[in-house]
Length: 167
Image (cartoon, rainbow, N blue to C red):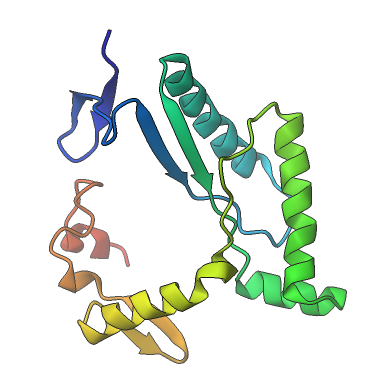
């Protein structure tokens, strides 16, 4: 029996075919660790754990990666208010997150990369986007130039003009 997955781009069901035979690689955006988890965090964790378990039930080896965003203005502010460095502050909420999802019966991720460990690569990537005109800097922040991406909002079945309505 085949697995069918809804393809948002084509708006149709398609047969699931893994890139690597018998292996599913899942990358799931994890929490920004500036506070304890809330119901929205728990909902996505449980939903993706269910998908992961289904693939495992169907006989696939699943590499389940869920990152921790441990670089954020809220983390910097919270750490300063708590009199902690950002790593210690983030570590506290990572430990709480892992305990909470364990209590929900969620399987641990194969890996939990931390954003802070990839800052050089992220900065290099953003620099390339700026150099190619796909992003721009204003007041120390970097923004994506959506007009440069011809397919921006295609998955939402929208155009840039649709997104501007009511802006």
